[in-house]
Image (cartoon, rainbow, N blue to C red; front, side):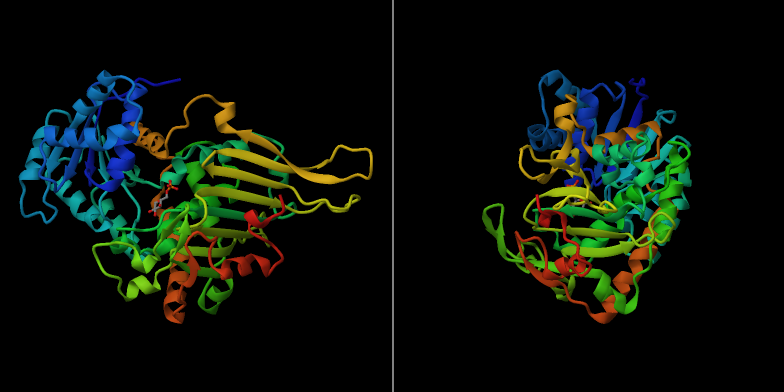
Length: 491
Ligand code: BG6
């Protein structure tokens, strides 16, 4: 059931950047094509680019059109006509950009007004102050903060204070695009709209959980950011912890903005802290070296082409992280949650594996425990591996076989990109899938001691060749307790 779209002004800071070109504008085009943007809705890109509207429309035409299905030129033109560009000076010395934005927005105070900050986090505070000074923050305004939100708890709190001085918490949308992915939302439906899972969703029946986000891409051209981020800040603090929350949370009383977020915060606050020397036992860091990925020879992290040369920070940063986490509460006591993410892995895939315990008493030789695999990408779907008897008249032979749900085969509708969903939620004012301030703080509170211990123990990342499944330490992390990563399981 589609609602009548409300007209809105979406102002994107960092409007000519990589994220805007690769994700935001394609997603907005899809929303437009599906009739979800009101005719008057405008998209205003802010950047240092010195472009006028025509230049900017030309840029989007050249860079975005090839990546979206343009089956009808009128629709594409309608989308281009929504686009505007305003050049803004980040130092604040030249106020002409703010004046131009003010002129563009004048007379449209009643529309929902969304400021999307797809710019580096140090600009969040200054941009919000400028918007306030220019009188552009209306009661119907919202602000979207892209990750990374700080690099530790202290810097995240500072950013949140700066933004919070201008916008109320209900107006602030902290984005984690993993929450917009279809299968991630399906996880909530699977857990809370089906009766059979909930009674066994606990430490009595579940042996452990694995969450893997593997990427084949490296980090060419991203050294400036990545050297100071690393896999823990870039992926674990947000995407992987959000997935862990959705697997581990208690059933919320309602599907509304606060109930779900309240439950997620409780999970984050239940994570057992990993401190001091424990990092050697519970965490693994890796950095890729040269190797073969996707059939081609690729350089190691330190030799990736970039504008800046590697520094000490480049040697110390991890492109792979694995952690054995524990949720210290009644439901999950003693169940390890293994988290793993890395660049230049053999395949690009994200999945959650829930490994059940063996039957209490086995009467058949060769039975293996059940396993539920939720594939987030690619080929979104759910597989429940159960034991079945192989056909035959001889001895009973067992075989694990998957009960399989492929979203592509079951539903013929297009699976929307995460940003489509999230952008529409911001435009319509639904913050359920966005992170609340206390959620971000709780995640950093768990991450900070790990970062601190890595720093003080000088834990160097273990090398792993590009195209491999990570450093040896990651395998030891699970094999120590007689477990294995999913790809190493027998079929
Ligand atoms: C981003 C990270 O948040 O997520 C990137 O900064 C990473 O390093 C990306 O590549 C992965 O997103 P997706 O949707 O492609 O899995």
